[in-house]
Length: 354
Image 1: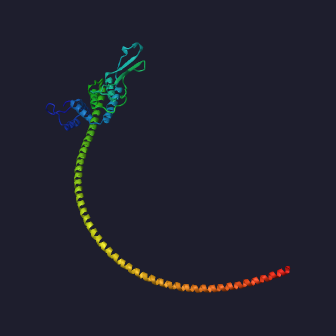
Image 2: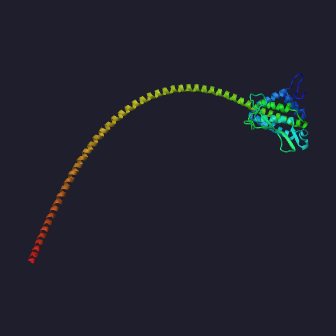
């Protein structure tokens, strides 16, 4: 068994993955399992698998994975184990000034982390943009800590929204394989970061691969269902067309039969209406004759009544005229008597005056 793979007899013949996992989880210690994961990651097969896993992750997931799985942890690592070289013997030792220059390892980590963080590229690219860094010194005259810092530029002043798989893969090779470790403790902490990182990548890759496979299955199922629905719709359309044609024929025949029935019923009704009109005319004629006779008799009776009433009225008028004449004659006599009395009184007055 090599440090990175479990081999079967024969050159470059690996055991099945399930068997390898069984061996590495049951018969190896925790330290050996960690080393197995690291060695496998650093192998050509492991790097290819890692690149494939990264490709299966969405861009925002790759960014979060970079920040939480590498960037923050390595920042903490180099801040904890930030070894530097004391250059006080090379710059004015009489002044007691201490110049502390960070190690090469620290510079490589800082430059590569910020290069990815701010949206630049490590792998080959058509982009000619490259990040700028400065060596900043401290303000303390007795201690000058020379520290490399990224210089923000337009379009590269905050966390990127996407990290190319090629850049991500190259960054991991630089940090976990090519970078020279300054101390054993640094190596242990870096291996722990790598172990956790690889497991998270595998877990996320499995998750999103299943999601993509399910999405493909759903898409294929939807396509098949759409085809089935289209075929069913076509068959239904044909059935509906045939049913509509049959219904149209039935409706036409029913309409024809109904028209014949309506015509016959109209003819019968016309005959009934004609007969009823004739009978009604006879009834109206007989009723009019009877009414005329009644009106004639009533008119005769009314004429007799009017004649009798006129005769009675004439007698009443004659009697009233006679009574009025008597009253008028009596009034005339009274007026004449009054006039005679007035003449006698006038004569008496005249005599008295004379």
